[in-house]
Amino acid sequence: MNIILLGPPGAGKGTQAQRLVEKLGMRQLSTGDMLRAAVKAGTPTGLAAKAVMERGELVSDEIVSALIGDELDAMGIESGAIFDGYPRTEAQAVSLEAILEERGRKLDHVIELDVNENALVDRVTGRFTCATCGAGYHDKYQQPRVPGTCDKCGGTEFKRRPDDNAETVRTRMAEYRAKTAPILPFYEARGIVSKVDGMADMNHVTAAIEDILAS
Image 1 (cartoon, rainbow, N blue to C red):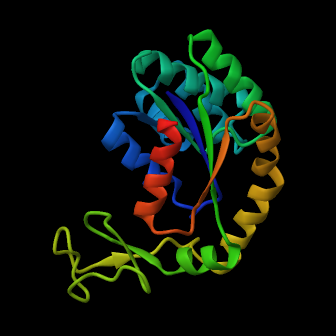
Image 2: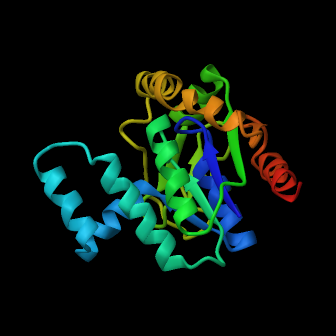
């Protein structure tokens, strides 16, 4: 099974993808992670990407497509894929169709995590992580059980992402609406789009996604 998780940054795509990985043995394909790994490994695609980035330019769709193809080839046909953060544009959506078809795959579901912008700002600006193990917390919704001490590792230092602020979140939302949301009609025409309330409890979101995949 091959699926796309759509939604603006902070909608919970990464969390839900990881749960699918753990429960269903799927592979999460995050273009950012794959790009960093390819550059570090010195693969032909990684070297091409590194040269582009060193010039201060954006990595092209062709390079991103090559990364996706390389990863699909490496994981084998028996593993399902979760596309996280890709495709972002209609051109990438068309490219993904070709990449999958070349490998005997097809896209089964496109799941959009629907969010309320004001509530998302509240969610993102309140989050912080343990500086030692990376466990996630939130000022309002998920404080450590013992204040100042990580539940998982006992660490006492925490950090926040510098871009987790209201202005940046609203900019990301505007970019998502302008660039990524327009790909939905491409998939709606095929009848494979489902919406899930991304503002619901994480376990409810997980259950809703699993229901969609089982249908």
